[in-house]
Image (cartoon, rainbow, N blue to C red):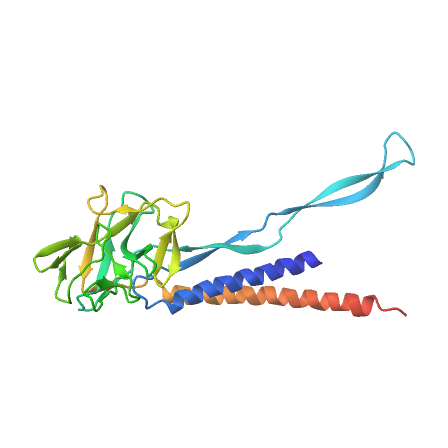
Length: 274
């Protein structure tokens, strides 16, 4: 009886975690460059159920030995194994703001390849983002809205000395007659990146290092100034998935309630003396 209780409870926990992931997607539906997460469910290993019984030996009457009879396998429920970002290109939105930039990804040399802006966080660590909603700080450096430096190809902060600059489609920041190439990084497998909060990604410990996207064979992309990449969250589909997850949660909840009533009867009624 308790196996079913735990299986239903695991189902509730998995659906709750899925709802949390989808709720976070909905919250960031208007965040530029946000990549929605997908929760992957995995079943726990199956258990082989056997029955133990005593059987007589065929050659010796009256002698019995314990034997095992296989009854079959039983599943013990599911759990959320991991959350995987979806790096599908989002639509573009024109803003007319010179510090806004959108990455438009074309063909890539790898099936799961993707491109990112390169930024430096407050601790000096390199991070990657698709959110091109940039600004210029008091020292004239191009930064994210969190104050992180936007880097060039050489890994240095880009100083625009104000808002009077242009960005070409190939990623050249043109300031006072000087051209500074944006630090666009390419990941051969975007699944090697993990979210680091604040629209940032970092490379997993065992991930393949990102490379400079400029001039990379087989890679096509462009930069659109005065535009932002929208989130790739499909709000209608996400709402539908949330309703399905909620109904699955309720179904498992009802199973748990039935088990609870059965256990209550077993303890307080069936086992009651005289």
